[in-house]
Structure formats: structure tokens, C-alpha cells
Length: 612
Image (cartoon, rainbow, N blue to C red; front, side, top):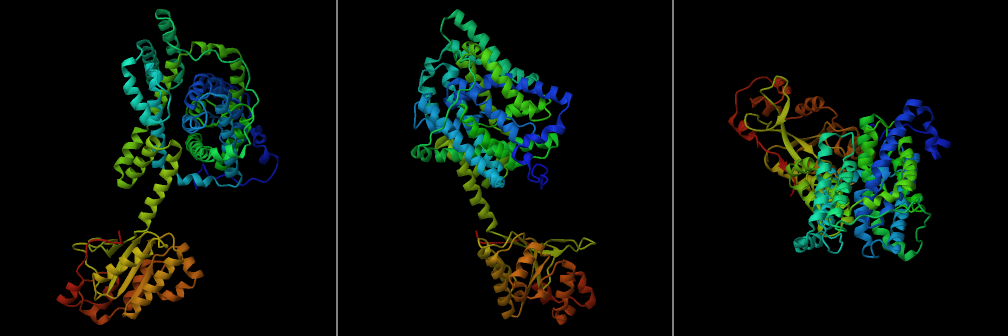
């Protein structure tokens, strides 16, 4: 068990219901100062970031800031990570936009109401997963699916933001093909002033990222964009549009819709967002927990995220998740406890009241350029190269996940990737291999290796290592592999299966072992299970299959197995065999080579695969 999942058992008490009551021993003057400074840094960063993510989500700009106040505080109070910061995220924002545009006009009151309702539904799902301790479900989302999904999100963000990056007057869309075609067709109408502002923002962000990691790149990027926008509008009035002044107010009260038809309509989207959001939380939380040597309770983190979304929906918040940029910045800024995230939310509330009018100087082009940087950062080139080199199966899962995200539905990408990953897993595990094994005659310790040239096998007894568990999906392949292994040497009747690579046996697998044992005995042979692990052996014991196979045929150690099995061989053949495959053969003395015996012992030199 990893340190991020291993959490000490807690007795039920006030701290169980209110986890923040356990923070007391962590407080000190130095820690409070560090947390408050980290909170101030986080509040400054979320000003442009919150507006940017609201832009992706199709929400009015101020809602990106509303979602960074109450939900951030609630997630910190009820989560277990000291550094994870909740807030609007790129993936959740994009999925929300892609889903809700089919039901309401972007930015309309109905659109906002649906987004708030979606936050409440997502929160209830996350809360349920945490309360019922189902956090392990996210383990079914493979690394390949995560990389493919985030890459698809990144590409989609970059393509859909080109309209604002170049100043094109084309309809806003979340469909990849439409965004690409629309950009190409409208390219001749590109605004020079808007493009220059975007490039200035982009250049400032890239330079800042390369020069230092202490200052979040989005801050100098946005400042450069604002300055470039002011200059452009002075030279060519009204050539560069801006976000406009935001309302000077705290998050207004709101309420999700309880209409059954609306809830049913949003259910698939809520499920997709909950899965992707929780995966972000787990990925970010574990990464930071490892760096800070902190134990992370995944289920408690789900509870925190669930409450953040549910309670946030009553304070004009749309869906939030773990924010990688803000969480990493929080850690790098020296945060010690969750107080940093709480203070970030509270400071942002104060800043919003006083600094909201400054958004009048924030160009849409600068927001688009900063989002281009965000989208590019989501494409993990190193992981993509590693996955591509790993084989056809992982490549297929990767391409399918990206393809569904770009060409079908972004909200279905993770589900499609998980489904295909499980299919690949079932295919792999349903085709176990039997690899012929022999002691290496060139090794003094007679270490067991794959049979091959110069490594002969015993003419009476063959050993093979089974790679893969024996369950209902693999039974037919296992029996086919064993029969093929048997046909290679028709004169050999006794077979030993090294079970070290078998972690699991179910009812169908146990029945198959018993059936194959009876069949070999009927033909004058036998089947032996060697190096069997405790869990499979326990299952065979409980079902009575050890008695059917024969207790004398089941061995925990290889040494004991070879000692007893060689004692059961035809010693007349042994006395005429000069191969001396096993150490135990020495007891029968040396004898003349027998060509027939040696010929019958010729190695096969290759594993016996199951059906493919």
C-alpha cells in the first residue's frame, strides 16, 4: 500500500465530521505566515485564471471567480491534502461547455442555472463515493487514458481559442472539426491588432516560464497582454475587445434546479465530470503528498470535493476540481496546511470587491493566448512518447481516447478509454502462456531458465511456468496451451506447472485443473502444481480441489517437488539417460548415452501460447 493511500484508522468523533478540528497541533506563527503568504499568491493567480476558465466554460467571467471562493474554502476544510487547491479546471470547464451548449445559449441565465445544477449533481456523486469508501474506483482509469484524455482536452482548448487569438468573427463551438474548419475559412479576416496582443501575451508567458518558476507565468503574460491591448486601442481605437468590468460583489446566492427532467438530462454529463474531476484530484493529491511526505486519504478528499461542489452551487459556483496550477503554486509558495487554501478564497473575496473593475483592461486576446499556454501544457509529450513505444495495445487505447475526445464527445472520452483498457486487459489475461523451464546446465546453481538449444529437458517429466491467472476468461486458453505443450512430446506423461505467476484462481480455473489432472492420469500421466502461492492454494483447499488434484501433487517449493516427482519416474529409463537434467538425477548413477532417450528429450525452445 502506498503512503498516499495508507491512512491510520480514526475513531468516530467531532474531527470525523469536522476534519479541520484536527489542524490545531499544526499551527504556529511561522506556519501561519507561510500559509497566508501562499494564500495571497494563490488569490492573485486565480484572478486571471478564474476568468480564463469561465471563458472556456461559456460562463460570465465573474463566475470563474465565484467558483474560486466558497468551493475552495469548503474543499480545504473537509479535504485531507494540505496543498491541494480546488477551483475551476480546464477539463471540467471544457466538458461543461461541450455539454450545455446543446441545451441553452452560452452565457444566458438558463445556461448558468444548468451549470449550477450540474455542480450540485457532481457534488452529490463525489460525496457518495467518499462516504461509501469507493475511492479505489478511480484506479480503473489507466495512465494511458489520463494522458490521452488530457491531451485531447488540450488540443480542443487550443483549437477553440483560435477565434479569440486571431480576432476571427466565427461562431463559438466545442466541436474540434468545426473549430478547425471555421478557423481555416476565416483566416483571411485575421485581425493584426488582436493577433499582436495575443503574441505579446504568448511571448511573455513563455519567457516567464523559462526564466523562473517562482512567478506564475500567467501573471506576467496577462499583464503584457493588458499593456499591449491598451497600446493597440490607442493606435486603432476599439480594435481589441476586452472582458469588461466585473461586478463588485461577493458571490450571490443561487440554487440548483430540482426539475426531474433537467436532472435526467444532465445525469450523463455529471457522471463524466465527476469521474474526470476525481481523477484530477487523485493525480494532483498523490503527486503533492509524495513530495511533502504526507498521508492522503482519498475518500476524505472525495468528500471534500463533493461538499465543495454541492455547497458551492448555492453560492453561484459551477463545477470545481483540483487545480494543478494553483495546487503546485501553493506547494512551491511554502504552504504548510490547508489554511493557505482557505486564506486564498477569503483574500480573493476581498480582492474581487476592489479589483473587479480592472477587468475592463483585460483583452479577450490575452485570455485566449494564456489558454493556448494552458492547452499546450496539458499535452504531456514525454508520456505520449513513452506510451507510443510501449506497444500496439497502449497505442490503441491512447488513440481511441484522443479520438473520442476530439471527434465524438469530450465527456465520453474517459468512459471509452476505460472500457477499451478493460477489453485490452481481459484479452491479455485470457491468453496465459506456458513457458518450458529447465535448470541451466552452465550455471553452478542450476538456475531455472527457458528451455532452448543446449538446455535439454527430461524425457519423462516436463516443467513449464504459467504466466497469468486461471479464471473463467482464461480457462480455454490455459487448457489449449497445456494440450499443445503435451502434444510436443507425446511420450512424456508427467507435467509440472510452476504457479509462481498465478495470483488468482476462480471456480472455472479450479475445475479446469482438476479435469486436466484426471485426463492425464487416465492416460498414465499426472499433473503437478509447483510454487503455488498462498491465495490460490487457499481457494483450492476451500473448494476441495486439492483432494481432487492430489495433495501429493501440490508443492509450495520447487526443491520438494523435484525430489518427490523424480522419485516417481521410471528409473529404468533414468538409468539409461545421460542428460542429468536435474540435480536429483545424480542418485541414479552415470550410464551410457541412449540415442532414443536423448532424441525424445530434444528441447522445444519456445513458449506455448494460449489461443489467440
